[in-house]
Length: 391
Image (cartoon, rainbow, N blue to C red; front, side, top):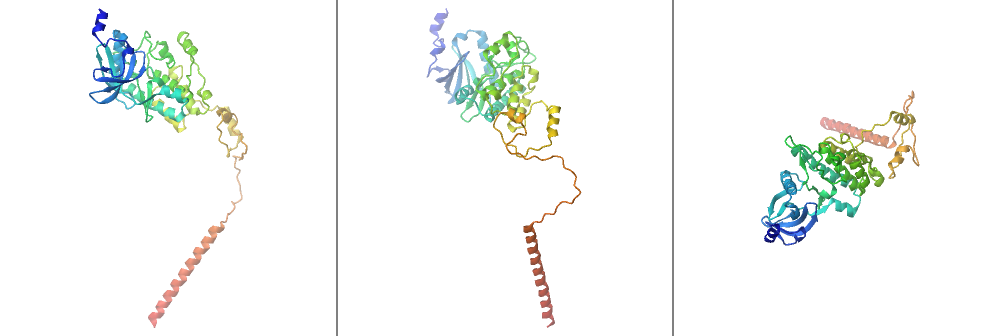
């Protein structure tokens, strides 16, 4: 029965039969953009609107699977509700024969994952600006729609030709409301390398902090061109319920600021209570790092502070160091040439010395001479005037 149906339906084909110039409803396929777990993505021309779109096509093998079809259409429904300049906009979703498709905004650019693979480590400011835009988009999705992404990673971020980032692939996002319970752990979705501990274990109700964690992993990768966790660490965390540990990003990229390293550490906290509790806090922290004012909650120990004050020295000619931060912290007063100033100022009963400025005195005398000449001329003029009146 199925074989006869396949013969009568030309669209019932394997994914590899998708090709250029193939028409699916109002769309003509132009170039293949990629392949994912749910199907293929093509650049296509929407004939009625005369515009390029990204056409995500569900694999025909999965079109008879109700769960996959439901997830696919759920992506269309969720994405269509979002109206944010940095979230890929959904245009339409439908089916043609046994092809289910979703048409979205086409971004002429490159995936962030490919950019990292090609260019390597990104400059700190550039990476933070990208992460800030994505955090703003996720803030909107959470506050306006109680929507989580659950699969934040560089592979789901597009950078267009103007360096504007876009968040894509909302297919496994979840809406949590009073009518829809949280995950019970029976289905775990996402990418293990970027999952938060609670998401990988699937034993708690997820909230925005799981996306904060994944965004922190992405930021780490952007700045070091490496993932913070090895496959062994991830496996131990999932199966043995061990805490994930990672090397500080400054070890892999010594040019990172201390504030940026502290921000990543906070976002990657194993205990979600130690992460930011709101996207607005994440945005504020990123702004502080960009401004150079971010600091962790750690305070200076009293003993260390007393030791610093007891030196009573001001390091006026401190050199700028491009070396490791540890050298500056351990030797704060080390320099090739330094000027020591006693910070204790003793009282003096002698009057302060008078400093004469020769140039200032010369100008003052010249002004006085000019005033005397003008006054004398005025007196002479008055005398002459009265003499003429008398004569």
